[in-house]
Length: 236
Image 1 (cartoon, rainbow, N blue to C red):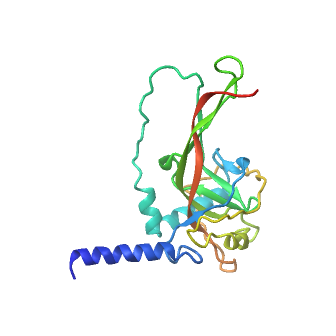
Image 2 (cartoon, rainbow, N blue to C red; image 1 turned 135 degrees about the horizontal axis):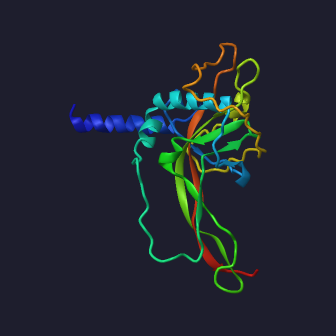
């Protein structure tokens, strides 16, 4: 068998493996397409500082290093990607806020951008103020379809050390790559505790054997994200 046959065979296995998403993707190496509608205030743009989140990051790291497709995708990004300089002074200054993840399943499930500073998903924040005379204002524009990798898992643990919401997580796992509507329930964010512990400062945690199995998965999220603020005429 020649090298070409081997390469084609490996590629075919990867394609079949990627599309056969039926259950926990840790067993088949697939990456789902996440089509959940996320409310604006369910996106996370600030760091989460809690012991539960540090345990979440530990599980993310373990899952990533055991998942070839997700690992190779996230490590395909360059370390530094500085945008080119722009000439002139914009009429509308643009502040950019980084998207770190989002909550779903009424706040029980956290989907975190894998290596957020490498994927670098940022949205434009605009003032909405006047910019060029009457009936003009600075609004978001330049929408770009962004594809980014997230790790979805339960965040909180109960007094027995078990993850809260694993049933909801398993039931809402996308099952295929079909771009069909998948509307989960909305949520309201829960406040994280005041702990600032890090993985380095804590012993590595494991789920007690009496706990239900974890139902984590990797998924690609596709969002139209505003890249700039532009001066627009409006009926104000």
